[in-house]
Length: 396
Image (tube, rainbow, N blue to C red; front, top):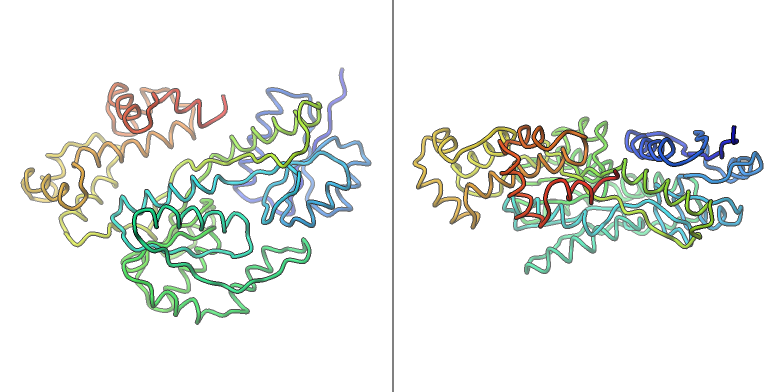
């Protein structure tokens, strides 16, 4: 029997999201390689040198700083990095598609009729700056202003828990008063995109302690959908989730190509694509003054897995169908039917990525009622049929 190639997954702490990346890597290993995958709980240089000495041919490693990336390059073992904060030189790395993150957040807030926008993030993190810049581009393109919290600069001299350094600098050294003052001067209601869930949870706690109603005055959206963090918040945090299994699968394919000589280390990026927004209490509001519209929108989104008719919504609100249609056109610039279709589409899109369910089951569970209706909606909204959209957004 051919000896298996030893590959390591190196991370100091395994989270729910890293488990999903590992799952994608494992799927690739089972389908494509003769690898023996091991988990190693320490990403120090000594550990990586030891793994190479023990004939480990490659690794997926949690690396945060540029300095650490250079040191790993010097070891000479092929590596794909994840959990990065800074540039990785010529190391391939996994990172979210920041432009898609920003677009997903902006589209979500606009559909909820927000006109005031803000961003709260870590100044020194590459991905945080990217998300801020892309979000600012979408906001300003519509003639609006993005309000950004300006935190102090914190130099990262080495790889000794730099995220913790940033966290301490943001929360302890600068204190909460500056953040409270910033929140107070924001125009209300305001939609805030926060660069990651743990920081969004901190923002929720700070805002609540200062007496700001969430989500009535301040709607807060995180990134990563770390359920342990999101659900502990009060109110629970809405967050953008990623197709992490596909990212792991693609990263394994990249490392396989590098080990086999088909590719070289040249700083390739495996872009994690947003899958959906998990809507929770921190954004459970529509920034419109009309109470009938608020009730109608909430009814649609709370019942979007069911087949909905305009008559159902009008009946629920005890309002005439014509009056409700006029309110939608005046307030949102679109029809009730369009809002219903988009709500069904959001569910179907998540099911296509996260499950292997057949098309007719997805159509039923997402409220479309038939595959014909679902195909028509996907063609109109994405330009693709559902099965082609699935192929483009997840591994086979």
